[in-house]
Image 1 (spheres, rainbow, N blue to C red):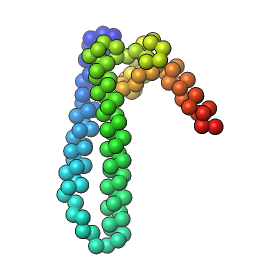
Image 2: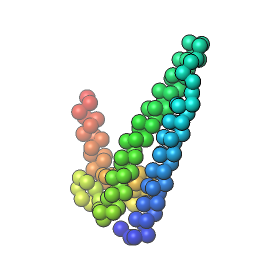
Image 3: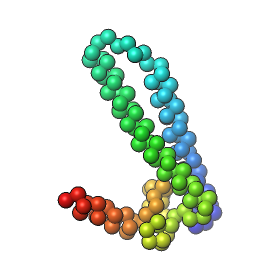
Image 4: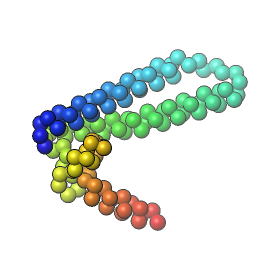
Length: 120
């Protein structure tokens, strides 16, 4: 893959990583700032539901952060854009849509079909 294209993906991944870390800091600050004494049960339940939702989002972003780190490492190692399953190059459009991907569209489709058949 061209150096210019790799730099573009590196920049995109680093920006996403920075956004995730910024949001995590914001969430932590908000959780620390919220008072724990909410007398009304409905308000307390609503606040707890909101905190729970926010924490689930951060948990998903933590998983994405790991994938971003792995993708950045693949760029450094020189194997970014190679399918982990078949070894072929992952299409540029797929990488643009999901730069953390490790599977080409054919292998991902096969994986999803296999998972779907196992659930039945």
